[in-house]
Image 1 (cartoon, rainbow, N blue to C red):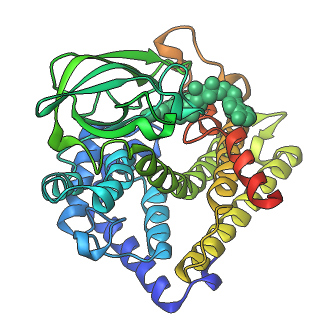
Image 2: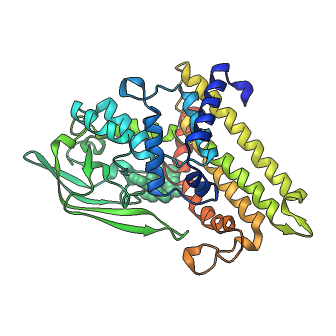
Image 3: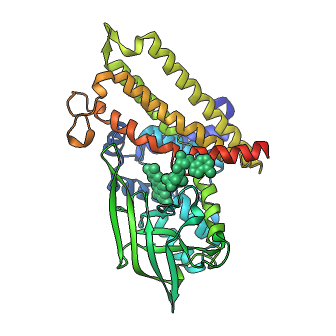
Length: 393
Ligand SMILES: Cc1cc2nc3c(=O)[nH]c(=O)nc-3n(C[C@H](O)[C@H](O)[C@H](O)COP(=O)(O)OP(=O)(O)OC[C@H]3O[C@@H](n4cnc5c(N)ncnc54)[C@H](O)[C@@H]3O)c2cc1C
C-alpha cells in the first residue's frame, strides 16, 4: 500500500504512529487489543487526548476547528488508530450530526454543540429507525407538534445504538402529514435527560446491551433545537446518510482482526500441529488477506478520486457491501480456528470463560455481534439497489 501513498502521506502516517506510541495509554490499547469492546471512560479519555493534540474533530475542516485532513490522511489516521488499539470515537456526534450542524445548523447550534462534540463532552446517538420505518425511513411516525417555543414529541425509535450511554439524540420527526411523506419530516436535537423519555434495552444475541428502544411521551423540545427549516429534515437526513456510508471503511478494524486471527490460529493445536500450519486454513486466511489488500487499495483509489472532486454514488454502497462481508468472514474464520474452544457457554452472557486464553472468550460474541454489519447503515440489499440504479440506470 505504501507505493500508493505520497511522501507527504507517508510522513503523516509516521507522525500518527509516533503520536499513538507516545500518547495512547497501554491500559486502553491492551483492553481493546485483547478483543474487548471499548469502555465509555476510555473513549472519553482518548477523545480528550486527541483534542489536546488538535485532532478532536479529526474529520472536520479547518473552518470548524478541525485539522483539515485530506480524505487520505483521515483514512490513514483511522487505520493506524484501529490497528494500535485506540477506541473508536463515537461516530454519531463527530461524523454524523456534526456535519449536519455545520452545513444546516444555526449559529447557536454550531457554537454550542461543535466544541462539545470535539471534546466528547456530549455523547450522541441516532434516532432515525422506528418499528415499520427502517429501509423505508420516510414512513416514520414519531410526531412533533408546535406549542409556542417548543415542539412536543411523541413516538418511538428503535435499534438506537448506545442511547443508554448517550446525552443527546438527533431525531427525524414528523411535523406534517399533509404533504408528500418526505416533506413532512424535520430534524430535531433532543436532550435525553428531558422528562418523558424512556430508554429500554434490546439485548442482542451476543448477550450484549448495545441497542435500545427510545420512547417519547409529551417531550418538550425548544424550537432552537430544530436544525434548519421545519419540513426539510429529509434533505438533511440524506446528507447525513452519505456521510454515514462514507465512514464505512472498517479497514483498520479488519487489519486488527486478521492479526488476532493469526494469533488465535497459532495458539490452538489440531491434528498434531497449530491450526495456522493447516494448509486448508492457510488458504482461507490467504484469501481473506487478499480481499483485505484489494479493499484497502480500492478505498485509496476512491479517496484519491474524491480528492480530485470525482465522487460517485457507487463508492459508498460498494465499500459498505465489501467491508461488511469481510468483517463477518474474518470473524467466521476466527471461530473456525478455535473450533470447539469457540463454543459459547450457557452462562456469563454467552462469553466463553472456560478456556485459559482470555482472548478466546471474545470470539463467539464478536462473531454474533458482527451479523449487524450487513443490516445497519442501510442494509446490504438496499446498498445493492443503489449500486444497481447507478450502474444500470
Ligand atoms: C445493531 C444495529 C444497530 C442499529 N443502530 C441504529 C441506530 O443507532 N439508529 C438508527 O436510527 N437505526 C439503527 N439501526 C437500524 C438500521 O438502520 C435498520 O435496521 C436498517 O435500516 C433496516 O431496517 P429494518 O430493520 O426496519 O428492516 P426492514 O427495512 O424491514 O428490512 C427487512 C429486510 O428486507 C430488506 N429490504 C427492505 N426493503 C428492501 C428493498 N426495497 N429492496 C430489497 N430488500 C429490501 C432489507 O434489506 C432487510 O433484509 C441499527 C440496526 C442494527 C441491526
